[in-house]
Length: 499
Image (tube, rainbow, N blue to C red; front, side, top):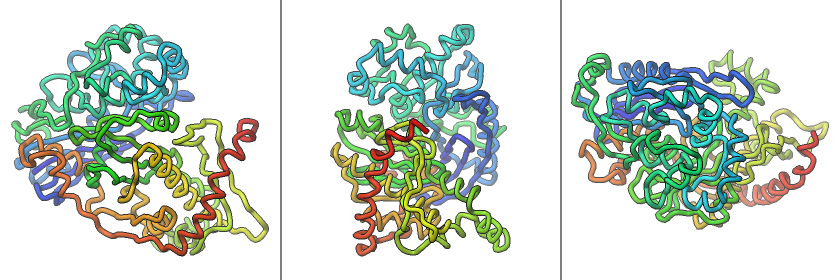
């Protein structure tokens, strides 16, 4: 049996799989994000580990003695200062913590941005782990002096579980903006310019590397055999991609939750001008000798939540009567064909490829005959238009997508899935195992334990479920509407900062 753990931003999942990919146990626990000031997003990392242990106990309740190996999928970019005893010295700064604006500008002044991107696959941004370390070193020097390591959740969770040393997998290391993706090592040049020592960072290893065992004391607490292997895992996006079978070029995963992420992999580093201008990262896949990127739109499912909370009271009321989710009611009542309205879904600024924090949302085409259902359908369409736009931008870099798979909350709705197929013109597939990140982590654990010859081989466990074929007549109609959508951002770009 193999245990895959997915440590997310607001909750942790633990799932046990047999070597054929069948889920045999599951645990889940939620936790909080602390917003103590504008731009701040923190978390009690020790509490996250406590919840992780609870989720593990729940998942392995009946089969803990059979667990051969454990690996972990984790949220990206968070930074936790820890001491030699592996205890957190302060709250974690999460990826969505944007307090490091000035440090970002310092990086832009110190480094040539394009050269930095070509070396690390990342460009300066407040979300990056290195920016957060710079902020901590500058604003809390006492904390920095007490810090033995600055770690991400990947090396933190493994250390707490009993890894032999502080280790970080290549996928997480290459998201920090301090890691050379060509030499697979911390960049001494970058760290020296920032007066940071490489000793403050964990040892980088490939995903699938065995880094220790669970240990006797913790094995008793968790109900797992003490010789269970700990295996270096990966960032949640490539782990989910592995769990969805995205292990070769021309495949992509649409992860549609609060945000919407489109991820793809490729065989050679892509650090050209289009990747740079589009804010697409280039970092390591969990699959050996493959690279990974993703688009990010901050407003995915959260935009339908905005609709529900502000315009969808009738659907909420009806859902309470029928026992359905309000979102199911909203989607069901939306017009069958294209909406007569257009929505620019930049309610929290734009995501890739423009990443414009000043962009704002808009609803266009309103008349006295417009209904809230027209607005709901236009919101749904706008999210897929953004997805299609990123697919077309990625194609300019040589990342052509022909096989699209979908996970997350957006994969629950057949109507929404069919809409994705109709607008993109591609078949859209769901997966039999919905917990793709947990499965991906379990596959990595299986490789570490010798169950699979390679991580890529383990991806053969993934199986598609339903495939939604595009309605080409509707696709033609949506082509016309998509053309208008592509004009919205540039048309409103000058107005939005004035509002």
